[in-house]
Image (cartoon, rainbow over all chains, first blue to last red; front, side, top):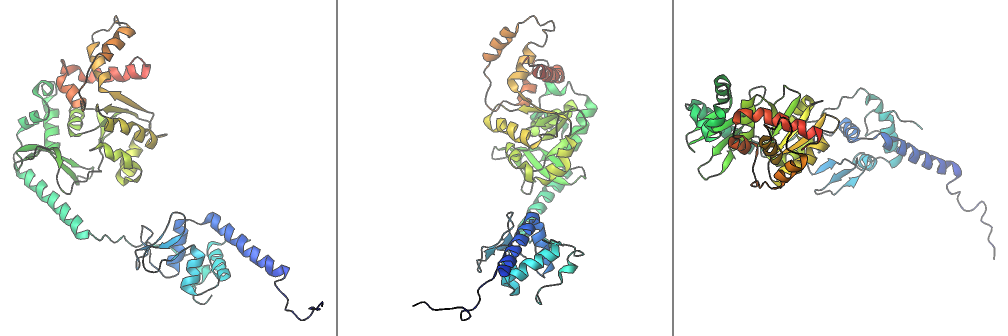
Length: 110
Length: 280
């Protein structure tokens, strides 16, 4: 039996939504091209944390920014990720919001 | 984005990184205090000028101008009454104490560093085109007395970590620009390994890094009076190949054993010339 599902099933992600996902990734890639350890430290300090000259978090010395621009906590939380996942985790925002925030800080546009 | 600050304010934001927390702050302070205490005690002791003969022999020192000897002794030599030995102090350009080395400690160790000494400190005197690498305190003293420019590595291991040595990068390396760096190599493997380290670190900075082994100096000395080059290249090679040099034989040993110590400076310069020409 063939069931006509037109008009019943919800519309799934359209082409425009796909485009925005690709755009965010493109924006993220553009940002990554200019990201440095120092830039990441700047953003994190701008957000209210304190970082020392060895790129370790002052309140959690087991957490640091690596040369590969990743943030690792070798202590209790075990967090490991990039600046976007750090922002998502600490500020409870979405991935898109995190990328847009970093882009606006650094003046990066598509 | 209510939890996040206004990104438009980021441009005017000035990054300030806080100081690194040194967990063993107190230990570091104690070590520096020890060093300073020893330094102050040594400064009160009378320095017997002849104590320099424990480091360099009278034959060589008699060829050095008295004024220069006094100047070097006053600047570097101290009397360690605890170990009953002369000691060398190293201070930087700002006269800040960096290291104290005891010539012969009670336990027999030579050039023992006092606790708190900065072993990575690279002492230098760079005023000529040719700059020598001294691999020890005795060599440094010799080069000072000869009036030659030098950089001093308190140990060969320092050359392994030159990239992260702040004092080297900020003070010493810039001063070596376009200089001819001559490495007076001790006769041991550890010293030979410094050639590559220095070549890599100073690429594009110095004019040239020229390694000179002790056998080169000895050969130049042996044929020093052969001004007309009567001895053939082959004869020199054969003579050179027959020489047996002790391990750890260094520039200081060469100077102290040289038959005519007044020729030391000329022998060194002649060796450099022959090395560059490819004769040695």
